[in-house]
Picture 1 (cartoon, helix red, strand yellow):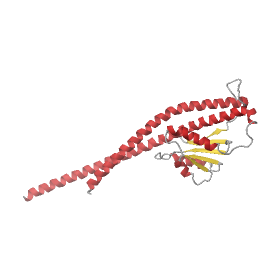
Picture 2 (cartoon, one colour; picture 1 turned 60 degrees about the vertical axis):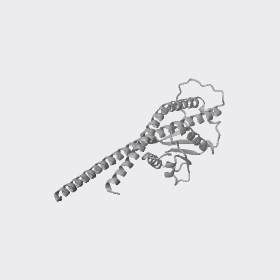
Picture 3 (cartoon, helix red, strand yellow; picture 1 turned 90 degrees about the horizontal axis):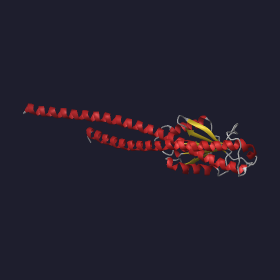
Picture 4 (tube, helix red, strand yellow; picture 1 turned 90 degrees about the vertical axis):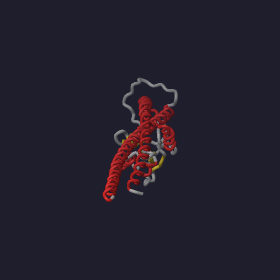
Length: 268
């Protein structure tokens, strides 16, 4: 194969790759729009659950605390990563933050996302769970996390390490601190305090997990979109340089043909 033919073949390959990356980028943009809408709604639901928990703890927290099971559960850390690749250093930054905070001694670590779990696989207390590839899978992932978390008893403490919009952050979901004020003057309930607290905790945990899963997934897709934009720019640069090379080779071939023609005329 001549050099020019090889360059033409490579140019066709670049154009095919550009079409694939453009399609993937458009899908990532659509997912970003869906996640942005879901974030606002989920944040509102999560805030409402937090307000309900604060109100209950302010009025009944002291009495309910004595009615909770005496045996505490394990200390649990949830680390949110990605299931899909092509998202730059998303998982690397989460794993780096994990080691900076020296969290590897936590009793139980749930690593959500196989690509992140691979980076924490050297620890025996890490349980790998599948992450959501898109917003439609978030609910199933949340239930998987809750089922795994309560399998050995409700954890005494649940923390979440996730990639916020700017950098990886760690937050404590449960237990919530006793609030020092409340907007409601009184609280009337029909369920026993301990039963209601357990139900509120579970609902708050579910909505909190959905919130942080949504934020993490949004950040992951933002990284993926940035990676695809960079890859597409790189392909365009390669294609532009290759076209210039092909044109130069074509011009050289034309010059050589002209020289042959003029040479034939000279000797004829």
